[in-house]
Amino acid sequence: MAPPRRTAAAAGSSTAVILRPAVPADVALLRHWDTQPHVLASDPNDDWEWETELGQSPDWREQFIAEVGARAVGFVQIIDPAREDSHYWGDVPPDLRAVDLWIGEADDLGQGYGSQMMQLALDRCFAVPTVTAVLIDPLASNVRAHRFYERFEFRLLERRRFGTDECFVYRLDRAGWLTRQSAQPGRR
Ligand SMILES: CC(C)(COP(=O)(O)OP(=O)(O)OC[C@H]1O[C@@H](n2cnc3c(N)ncnc32)[C@H](O)[C@@H]1OP(=O)(O)O)[C@@H](O)C(=O)NCCC(=O)NCCS
Image 1: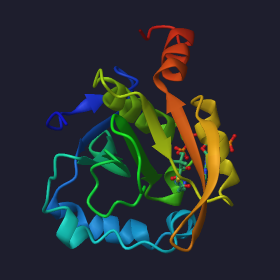
Image 2: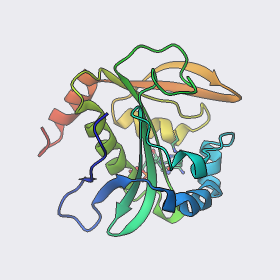
Image 3: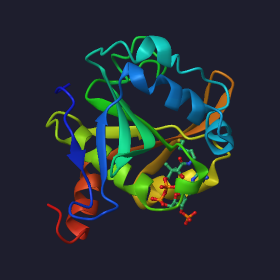
Image 4: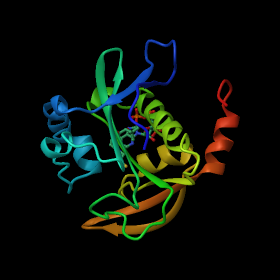
């Protein structure tokens, strides 16, 4: 993967989101967000081991803090699921990406930040010419997140159990992403 760089959505707007690399100094913030009810509800069974993971930058993963102005509002992770070291996704083909994201504070939900974060993440994923599709695995119960992803043209692939979590696996192919891009004025 290319080294992280700062990227911005809604350029020129005071609510423009940028993604900057997550660093070890973000541990306390991410641990705090982990305790927020909406974050726990979406991912009740995982320990992200921030103290360990933020000190590492494997070439199959990028972790970002989303900021609005200078204020942190959310987290985004992009992995290559075929190369991720725990093999969470099992036996998957190469040239995919998988994305995780959340808004940290409940007050920042529903402000459009998550949409910008996802747009930036998808731009980043598909900027790699060989990437064919992006995967997402919301809990089967997370109906609002399903709607969020479906607006991005993600399509339901299967229901699947990851550990103790019942999830829906959604996939966005490059063709679907291009269709969405061409439908948005001002974007390529
Ligand atoms: C999903 C999420 C990243 C979207 O970001 P956002 O800034 O809230 O979303 P936007 O303002 O851009 O878009 C609004 C949409 O987000 C989704 N959303 C809003 N609040 C949500 C919540 N608490 N849980 C899940 N999805 C939510 C809904 O689809 C909403 O559209 P709706 O009002 O028609 O239901 C964010 O809501 C979130 O972090 N939710 C909790 C954690 C989560 O579910 N993460 C995804 C795990 S796979």
